[in-house]
Amino acid sequence: MNIYDFDKTIYDGDSTADFILYCAGRYKKPFIWAFPTFFAFVSYALGIKTKTQFKERMYGFLRMIPNVDAAVSDFWDGHEKNILEYYRKQRREDDIIISASPEFLLKPICERLGVKRLIASRVDSRTGRYTGENCWGAEKVRRLKEKYGIESCERFYSDSFSDTPLAEIAEKAYIVRRNTLTPWEEFKKK
Image 1 (cartoon, one colour):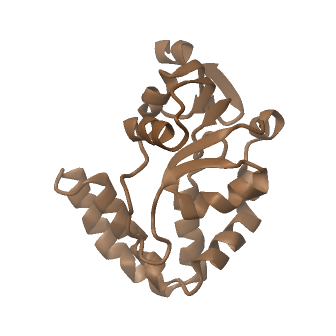
Image 2 (cartoon, helix red, strand yellow; image 1 turned 30 degrees about the horizontal axis):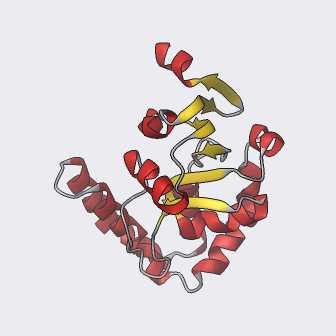
């Protein structure tokens, strides 16, 4: 079984940022939310707010989107092409995707790709509120054990060393740069 991060690993870009930009172009009203988000980011950068608190503020724009499910579906109609070719070629039935991006955003693309197992940040698509911790770093390993009882995997793929806790439970781990895969340990030496 292989485990993948999503953004910049099997998706060329940051799906959350792309979705926010997509919504900014399609729905003007939600982006009065930009100012409170900016101040929440500054508070996070100064250590006053947690990453989860900052992201909750960022996702607050969802309250002003009339039909988030339809917006997500339309978004993937135009952005599914950003799934990297290496992943399309090696996708397996037992793959697991683990991401800090919100579950409501990734579930539809996982269904399109035939990926049955997804672990992502639990964010209410109507309110932007988290119903758990941001699925990042060691939280990914905790959630993997909690949801599937899995403590190891054959291969792990990510674009970021923040995923080192998952790399440590893999027989082989790779850093992904677009369609280029580099063994984790080899990349660390660069």
